[in-house]
Structure formats: structure tokens, C-alpha cells
Amino acid sequence: MLPLAAIAIFFTATALAYAAVIKADERLSVRAARIRLGDYESPAVKREEDLREPFADRVIAPAAAFLVELLKRFLPTEYVDKLRHKLVLAGRGTPEQIDQFFVVRVLSLVSIPVLWLVVGTMTSLSGKTLLAVIVFVGVAGALGPDAWLNRVVAERQLAMRRKLPDVLDLLTISVEAGLGFEQALARTVTMVPGPLSEEFSRMLGEMRAGSSRADSLYALDARTGLPELRSFILALIQADTFGVSVGSILRSQAAEMRVRRHQFAQEMAQKAPVKMLFPMVFCIMPALFVVIAGPAVLGIFQAFRG
Image (cartoon, rainbow, N blue to C red; front, side):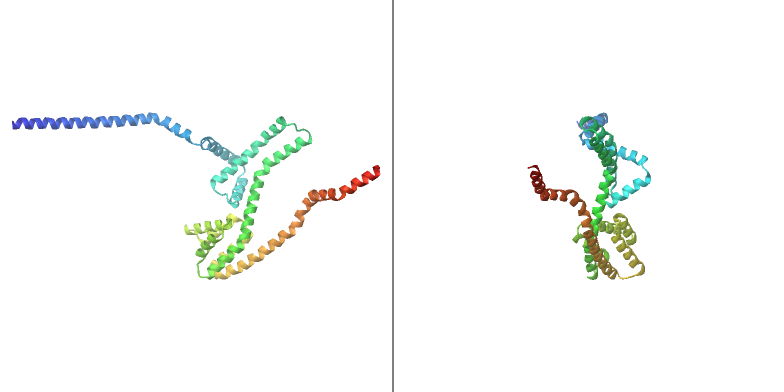
């Protein structure tokens, strides 16, 4: 009986092992079949995933990238570098924002003949009115983006010019209180918001990343293009070169910036009468003449008529 039991156990274990091997082989076969089916279905699944993305990411973004590359090939290198520098001055110096502006520039030029066709065929304008509208559309399409960019640069520089004396005053107080230049600048940036603080924050990030103070200051000058800030940067670089105290340099620069802001305010006040001349002559004076001389003219007309 014992040999028979041993044989039975041996055959049972062999059958179980064989069944386990067959089951594992079936699982491997099923897994391989699923992988093959997944490979067959992957293009369709990928296409469905692509179709779920927004239309702007699927169509508009590749078309815009193609337009940007085409524009960069045909435009002069000097013009492209000048536009890129203006965008940096405007605080829009990231590659995505630069490409977006190039796309807008291309569309503004392409839309000129389209708008001319629309104005000429779908409106009832004629003569001098049609010519004036065509000229306005052409000038707006050709010069509109550049004029907007120049306006943004001027507004940003004006905001930095106004904040610079306050930033220097707070920076001087922080340095004289015992903080280092970087710590004082970081504290000043958190206390005074604005584009100037954003540029100083970027300068601090460059310094913490390993750039020298002089290189970071020169990069700040290139990103802002502000004459007042350039004089402050040169003073700091000279102080580092010759070992002059930073506190004394900051105090003298803060006093100078306050004087410059006062002079700038006086300059703008002197320009105000000249800027008010054209609105007064063409808008205010005619209405004033109508109000004042209108009743007298009507009275004289009725007197002579009677």
C-alpha cells in the first residue's frame, strides 16, 4: 500500500505542477495577446486622446510656430533682435511671448489686404472716405503692433522711474540698519511691489544661482534700459571695484534719484500746456465760441432780416 500511495502522490504533484505550468503559459499568452492588441489599438487611442485636446493646441499652435519660423527666415536679423530687446524691456521676454508677438505681427500684415477687400466690397464708402479708411487700415496693420509695444515699454519704464527713489530709500535704510546688500534688497522687493521689484527679484535669483554681482547688474541694465537705474548700477559696480562703502553710495544715489524725480515732475508740468493746446484749439474753443457768440450772431441775423 505504501508504494501505491507514494506513486499516487507523485502523479498528483506532477499533474498539479503541469496544470500550474499550463496556467502560467496561458496567462503569458493572454498578456502577450493583450500587448499586441494594445499595439494595434494604440493609433486609434492616441488619435482619440489628440482629439480631446483643445483646438488651439492641435491646430493654432503648430500653425503659429510655422508662421514664426517663416517670419524669422525672411526678416532681417537686426529687426528681429530689436523686437526681442523691446519685448524684454516690456517685461515680455519669455520665448512663448516673443513667438506670440511675432504671430500677431504676421497676422497684422496679412490682414491688411483682407480688410481692404472687405472695405472695398462690403461697404458703401467711396471717394475720399474710402481712401481715408484704406490708409487708416494700412497704417494700423503695419505700425499698430510696434506702436503698442513702444507704449508698453514707455509705461513700464515710467513706473520703474517713479518707484526707484522709494526703493533706494528703503534699501539705504536697510543697509544702514545692518543688513547685507542681498538681504536688504530681498526685503525691499517684498515691501515695494511693481516692475522694478520684479527685475530686482530676478537679479537676486541670478546671484543666488551663481552669477557675480557685476554680471547680474549689467543684465538688469539690459532688461530695463532706464538711464537713472544705469547710473545706480554703475555706482554699485564702482563701489565693488574700489572697495567703497555700499551704504554711502546708496545714500548719495537715493538723494540724487529724489532730485531727478522732482526734475522729471517739473518737466512733465512744463509739457502740460503744450499738450493741452491742441485739444483746446480744436475741441474746447469751437464749443466756447458757439456758446458765447451764438446768441449774438442769431440776434444780429434777426435784426438785419427784420
